[in-house]
Image (cartoon, rainbow, N blue to C red; front, side, top):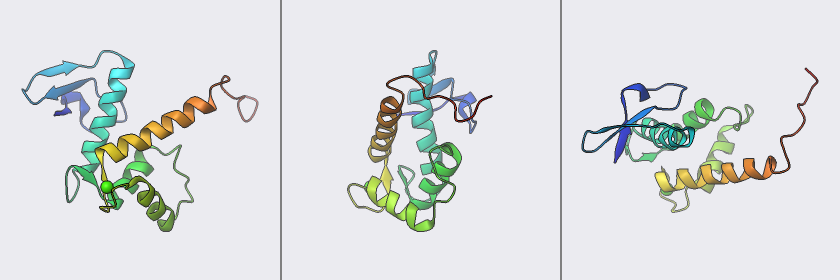
Length: 128
Ligand SMILES: [Ca+2]
């Protein structure tokens, strides 16, 4: 398993390094590598806050959505909306979101973005 490197302590920037189990620090040179590291490190950071450190409880998921995906999380989301979202992500119905469930949701988000921008980026909403 991998863990965040020295520069990967909570930060809005993607981690530049990751430390493997062996203790070897590996530099994430390219944006896609940094994106993968950010996906892994973000999950580990939030999942490790309480309870099972390998799964997100609803409070951890809510905080992750609000802080790490604010553009995709409606500000008017109510507690019942988070409950519904949690229930959709929690495919094995253990009341927590494991890494596979989390990655599946990010894959859906990536697919949505890809489809949205497939014919080129949309016009800006207002003239600059
Ligand atoms: Ca689950």
